[in-house]
Image (cartoon, rainbow, N blue to C red; front, side, top):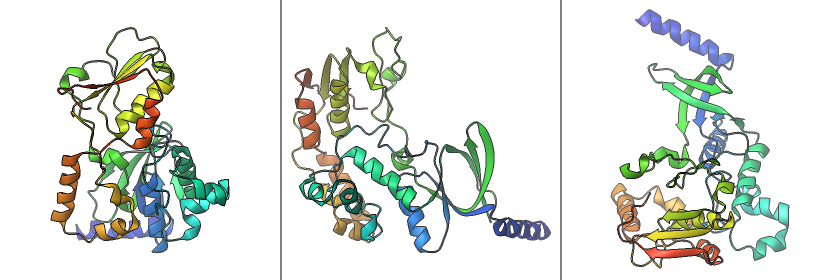
Length: 312
């Protein structure tokens, strides 16, 4: 066994010298993945980002995110790593000018998507698009083996360390009630059967919503954005079902977008962190004002108190 391990160590050292073993593989090239790669670069460590999406479509911004504007303040530090030239403000002023920044209220989702894409390109981060990680082998003590699929071809990638930057997907699958899971999930042009559905985290061809009656279960941020998207896509009617008898009025978690919270949160005791999350969950989150105003532009929307509705 010792002889085998010694041979394996020599082989890995040779592969590292030849550049065939990555220092760090980051699964996911969205915001968190990019930030992790940049932080590692500051430490003198090279990283490769593997993402199943096509270049420029990483993260939710051009697929499942449906808000008009981000909910964070425009001064959000984001990916800048304390470098002024990498802030969203620097990018925005270069694109639209300083006067436009001064009058800006909230960051456009599409502008944020363009900024994140620019960030990865200008820093020349090693982003490998359309690389889906299918399997990870942790059996070796010295290297991690990843099975990666790229355009129908499978290949093995070796790395000393792996970072998962999977976004919301890391928190598990959406909770789908049994009574609805038996229906076909995706809308299709030729569908004639009633009851087609999708989750707010699913990409949807919005052109298929035209002329339909849409029911949105829930009334928080994603629900309002889905309702507005359906109305803007020409839906005949949109009903919003609300379990609560009234909306929360205050977003108690709003402070999480401030730099002070970002710096202090990591040092808080675990029981404080858990207590905060439980409190936020109990008091609930109001739908963003911009999202509510977006829905209220259309007379074809209706909001109903439906106390037994199931949130998806």
